[in-house]
Image 1 (cartoon, rainbow, N blue to C red):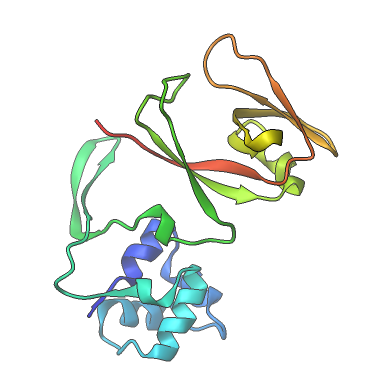
Image 2 (cartoon, rainbow, N blue to C red):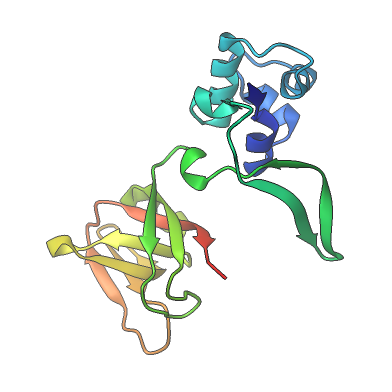
Length: 190
C-alpha cells in the first residue's frame, strides 16, 4: 500500500504542523512527517486520526501500488514551468471532502469566463452564509426545479440577487434559497 497523506495535505494547502494540530489529540509535525514518509507505520488508529484532520475518508489515505493515478509532475510559477522534486498524486476534488458537500455544474454554452465543455465544482452552503459569498460565482436553486448561476451581487435576510455571466444579463432574485453553492474549481478541456 502506498501512503497518500503528503499529496492530500499539499492539495489542501496544509503544513505538517497544521495537520498535527488538527489531530485529536494533537501530535507533532515530526510524527506526521514520519507517517507520510513511511518511517513510522501507518496504523488504523493513525489513519483515522489523520483522515479526520484532513477531512477525508480514511481509505483515501492509501492506495494499492498497481493503481494508476493522475500525478502532478510539474508546477507553473512566475519563472515558468518547473519540475516537482518528486511526482505526487492529483486528488480529485470529489475525494477531498470538506465541511460541505461538493456538487458539479456542466457548462453547455459559453458565457463570460466560462466556455462550453467546462465543468465547475461548487461547495454547497446554507443561505446564512450568503454574506461571505458576496462577489463570488454561485449556483442557487429556484422554484420549479430551476437554478440560477452567476455572481452573487446582493443579499438580505430573505433573498439573494445573482447576476448571470456574460454581457447583458439581468439579475435574478431568489426568495429564501434552500442553499447556495460557491464555485471552488474549474475543470476545462484544452
